[in-house]
Length: 164
Image (cartoon, rainbow, N blue to C red):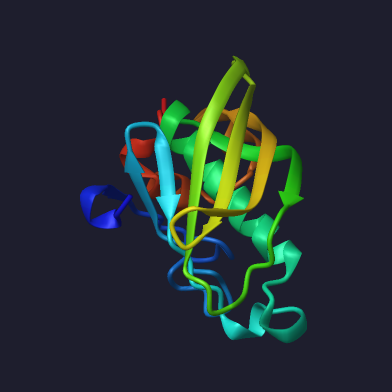
């Protein structure tokens, strides 16, 4: 899969560690979609490595959490927050590795919960880590009432969300 053949999903959040292009300490992930699968090709900054240039497992978990969140947001048009998440690590990932990350919704179990999976590949086909998560689903009205995010961030999702 090449990103040139995909539609980019734009994040307008100025603070998010995973997706903001303005957070100087973040991952600056960009997201692309074909049908129901979300893709990203993140470059992990040198300062986020663990031993000997290996990407820290917590950073890989963050990448997976981010791809799963955006998969749910894009596919069900609601704000989501992680409830539970499991991660399986298969191969080490190095700062210099070219990564492809994929996320997809597995099932929306009810109006308040969705199950999503994420995968990190090294190169084109070597599966290095995968995750499965259960995410809480929120309407825009609930997000405003609970003050989960500032109104300008919510509005920045534009046509990705049903803003009711």
